Length: 439
Image (cartoon, rainbow, N blue to C red; front, side, top):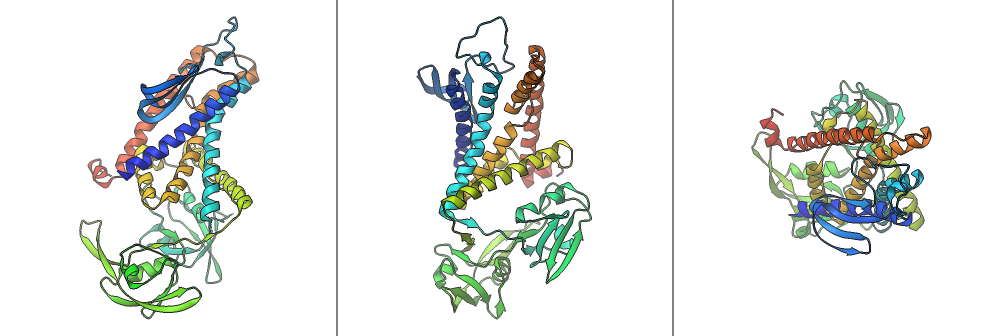
């Protein structure tokens, strides 16, 4: 249930702000708005205020604004016709482009606003390029990367954020990574590209600072939120992943936890609990648990820095999306990495379970995706309409309505095929379904 609610929240919010962008600029530009719909036809209910029908429609996967004179497949314009002052077709090319761009810009602006409030009220996560864990059997482990290594460069490009590490290993053969390992600079080369569903195996270093789950072993033992685990038994602990490994390896054992609390070093005995985990071969494995979650270290920032960082973060993620789509078109990135509504719903549900801040971060990320994607110069998308308007403005000649119709219909077919392919990919992410198709 939480997955459905989270998905509808994300989708409804992003569609609403996108269409609100089109609506606002159209109204300011004197263009008539016949309908503002949240959801796709058929119409369920609504209210008409002035010339505009504000309504809720039955298909909850989108929304639209219907402008006076705007058609779905090409806006048929006649130079000899004198249009109504509110008719979209009679407006200037710059105003039409502004209306078309407004939806995507509103999505990008929404991401900036969300990040601003998250940074101001929650703080900014401390960036790290230090590796906290390397899973054995993965490509990263085979290359020789180890916990504690600090990533300096990928493909000779300086790395400032951990999330910059992964993408090159999906795109490039023989990708290189340079690290600082115990004071020595080392460069490793991948022997191959990552497969579509393959995990590289790296996780960033996080201090073993814990959040407490009510009623869990850590809570019952007297551990407090914000405690930093410095040791378990006679073993020193350096970081979250090392702590987790020790706990998982000792189910149902009482062990002494050395904690850093308010600058003091204390020891508290904890009876580690257990849980049964499903294994790839279908068996169960008993592992230890204490009912603690990772508590990220956030740096408090003021209004001005929150605004600056929210813009920078949105710009960074927008550039990342543009790079991704560019590599997708040129064949350097597999289309199997794309995710559709099912994956978005699943991820929305998972992030919602971890708290409203995580859900809002995910919403901002999807909002940027939607904004960037809609500006791509592809028929049917806003960017496709903008591209045609720019061509007409430069050449001072109208693209024929027949050509526009063919582009729109062809683009619709390609887009529908892509959506079906992406949805199929989403289903294939579920192991049981994947096995049916030999995945």
